[in-house]
Length: 191
Image 1 (spheres, rainbow, N blue to C red):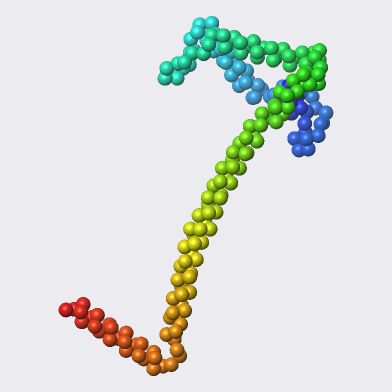
Image 2: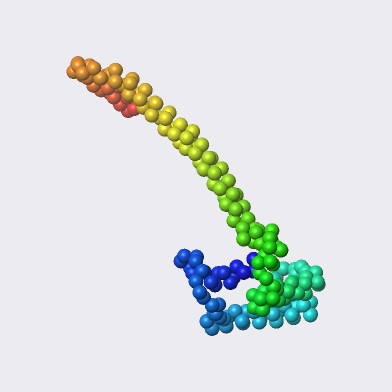
């Protein structure tokens, strides 16, 4: 688990194959801001540990952490740094044996504690449910309305088709009836 950063430094970005590469310090443009942030965090942490006062607080009421929490976190961090130094700098602790001792934790860390799988499952479930809902709307509402309108159009076309006989006298009668209806409508509209 702790060898992941060193593997990241040793891997060639394109292929993922190991290439001979020695770890090196970052350039000063990256190192200087990191040192400044680390020193500021250290000053604020030490100050708040010994005084009990946090210099930077939100405008809301401050909820204090237990007094043992900060020293315990510092001890755990220092123990992790010491363990990494003993494992990778002095090589007094075998990294493979250490990895096998923490096998389940290492396995969970390599799987990113299954958080990606959880998000993928939730997202897939949500997208699947949403797409089923959209599919139901499309199939039954949109397509259903269009099918009803097209059925009415076909039915109206079948009814109107019987009017078209191809004989001229039928069309003359149609024009005469339409003109008579127009004249009656105009007379009642003006009266």
